[in-house]
Length: 144
Image (cartoon, rainbow, N blue to C red; front, side, top):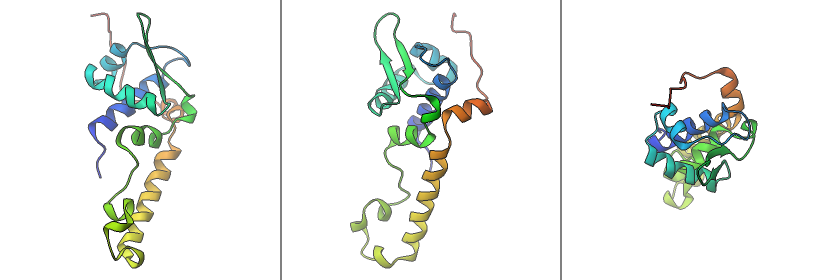
């Protein structure tokens, strides 16, 4: 399994917003510039994050994005699944009817356990904790 580009951009967006003062509205252009996200892609991702209740999109000349919840209440799992949908490692875990051997299959049990462990790990990683640990992307001058 590999995180999609959209999922990665969603994580970058929330990481940036989580590093800003609580409640601050940040211009989309600033987020895009500082987190290396194409402007058009950020708009699409922001919509998905807003539907999931993770960000608010503020319209108008003073508009932009802001976190809808405290960064300690937003996990990597929340963001990844808001963008890519619920994480499943294969079809037999997401759709029990896809395999007639599913009820007794030892491989199915491994896939299910791996999925649960991945979701647990991502669910425990909050953006407040990630910001506290520091991150590698530095703010760029957006006055160019």
